[in-house]
Image 1 (cartoon, rainbow, N blue to C red):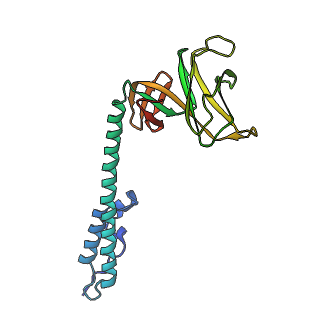
Image 2 (tube, helix red, strand yellow):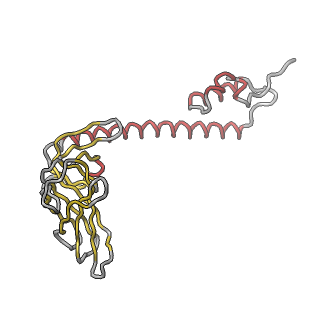
Image 3 (cartoon, one colour):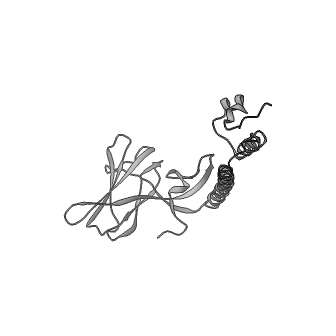
Length: 220
């Protein structure tokens, strides 16, 4: 009498599928488990301990699959919330963490954050070639956030050309040691870009990611 050998190699059941897919989902796993039970040798049945371990693996696989589905759902909800929040910022003044901005010659408001007291703070506006075109004195040296208005003019008293510039904040202590500081840009939101990868806010100082927004509304 011929006997049916134990099925332990999934490639014998699904040879063509095995070559196309390198990972199994929970449905595939369950199909293989049932096939193993149906084709096992009646004279040499599957070990109960091994079968229990396989069931435990299936349970873990199902839990991970469900968790992944929930995380995808949460991510989609978070994306929708971000988009709605961005649309609600139209016309609002925001403070973003950035050291790169755009100007068309109109007034701009820069800022900086200090973690420790400084003795002197200077802000520099650099063009795309790294040349300093405007120098501004800081408005405060205490820890916290401070803001400075810039009229769009160079140190030579001429309006700077429209384009992209860099903001550099240099904070020094009494020993002229450079202190940690964070560059900030303050502007009003005039548009919202709802991209597939991220949401961005359009302002007179350029376009910034929602992730860079630190404050909204009335800013001292």
